[in-house]
Amino acid sequence: RQTRMPPSQLCPLLCSGTVGARNASTRPPKPCAVVASTVIGRRRVCRRRAAATTVPRAAADENDSAKSSAPTPLPPGEPSASASVLSFLCPLLKVFGGGGDAAAPRNRVLEVATSGFASISRLPFGTTVDAAVLSRPAAALPKERLVLYEFEACPFCRRVREALTQLDLTVEVRPCPKDSEVHRAEVEALGGKLTFPFLVDPNTDVRMYESADIVRYLYDNYGNGAPFPESIVSTTVLTGWMPTLLRAGRGMTRYPGTGAAPTTGGAGAAPTTGGVTAPLTLYNYEGNQFARLVREALCELEVPYTLRNCGKGSPNRAELKALGGEGASVP
Image (cartoon, rainbow, N blue to C red; front, side, top):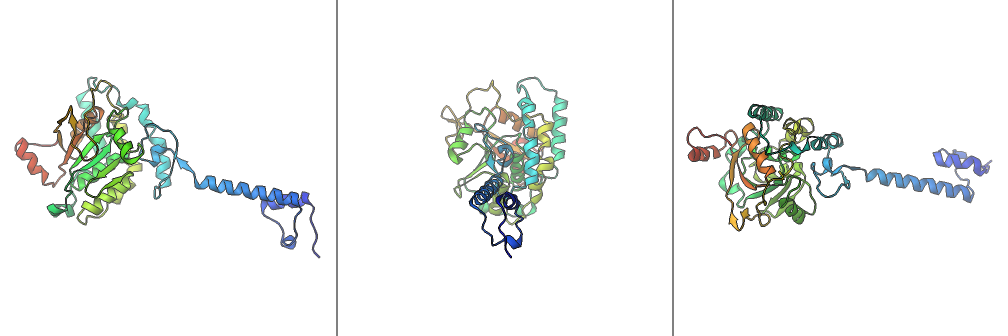
């Protein structure tokens, strides 16, 4: 025989979802229905909040946001473990004060040593050109120069630079240190948000955030069949931040004594100062400890430059020797 339970007994059961089978067909009084409806509504709200869980922009959107501290949703495919670790590590950049006074005298031995340890921490990435790239036809190279907005201290920007070395690609770098006067405004105008790295490919009209997506795009379009280096992406949470810490935040903040930054006229345009083209080219490979010191300075001065990669095995090394003599080396 079916019985009708009093509201005082039925409400807790509805809230816990344990209403007995023998009472399944019993209609609870209206007060209980309201309670159940309220509880279910709360559960829906909780589910919506769980689905919209956010991580700090520093982790989800490549380590940096200049104007807004509002969280952004975790991007698809971002490993939650990596995001949680990096969201803790990235704020450490601020502890170092952006690398201190860029104009202060430096201990040469300490500078070279810490930069060397930074390179060792990321081996073997960003040192050698991939074998498949060496047979890449000239027609497969970008006809117009790629533009990369980044800053030296960012571990996510670093993985893109490592890929550029391994792909032996030349790219125009537009540094975006904190307190940037020119290039951050370009990124916001082109992409709508201030996160880094940001790639512009005028050959395909592609504009991209997210370092892992950028690396995959570069390999798919300019890798000549070279396999995608999953380890460059997967090891960032383990060692990607070590060069930043070892170098005490160098290459993160614009030096306040810097004059007016050269204007670039938007993506694809040549850097200019006062209407005159500024031809600055850096021969480099990402893992070189001496080249890192130069890139840090260029970033802190917000000077745009052409990054000519010369990793081990690169044909560009012949060009470097023609310019600097037989013993020429990077940077």
